[in-house]
Each structure stands twice: as C-alpha cells, then as structure tokens.
Image (cartoon, rainbow, N blue to C red; front, top):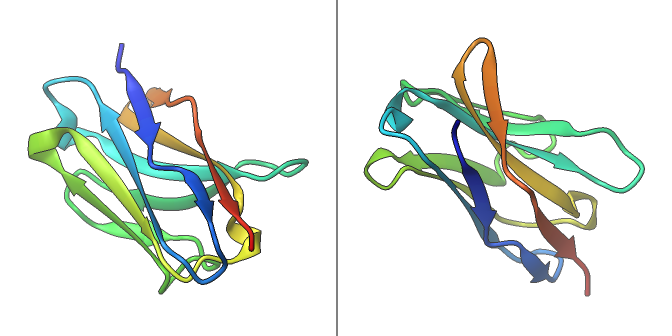
Length: 116
C-alpha cells in the first residue's frame, strides 16, 4: 500500500502562482510514475501532468507553458508549479502514484481556487 498526500492548494488571484506538493510513501519512489489530475465541479477528472520514473514529462494542452511538474526522489515528492493561473484552472487537484500497470494510488485532493 502506497500513501499519497497532496499539499499546497489555496486561493490565488488570476495570473498568480501556486506550487502543489505530493508526497508518496515507499522505498521505490524513484520507480513510480507520478502525476496530477484535476476535477472541477460537475466535470470529469482530467489529466494535468505526468512525470515518469525516467524523468520525462507530459502535459495537458491547456496547461502547457504554464505548469511544470518535477520530482525530488530523495524526498519522495513530486511538485506541480502552476503559473499564470486562470479561473478555469480552479479545481480539486489529485496526485497519483503508479507503481506498476495494475496499481495506482491516489491522494485525497487539494483545492485550488482562482478568483479575484
């Protein structure tokens, strides 16, 4: 069982920045694929960004150039730096840890509110 916990959400004005953190348990963290999804009220959960165990990344088109995903394997933590935030980025952000093709673990989510 892998424990996943997000932090760093909050209220930010449009155009502002936030950094989300996600800590995952386990001694094999460096082998996990990690990522972020988000879910706005009444909408499906959508992929935001992924960082693979080898360090490669991919992003949803809607966040490319504004969001950056990174990882610190020594701290068992993945980050999502979010810049130039827009009202449409407002959602609950969920972190996941994929430890193999059959096992994926989720955090509880952290709320990001973008409003003036």
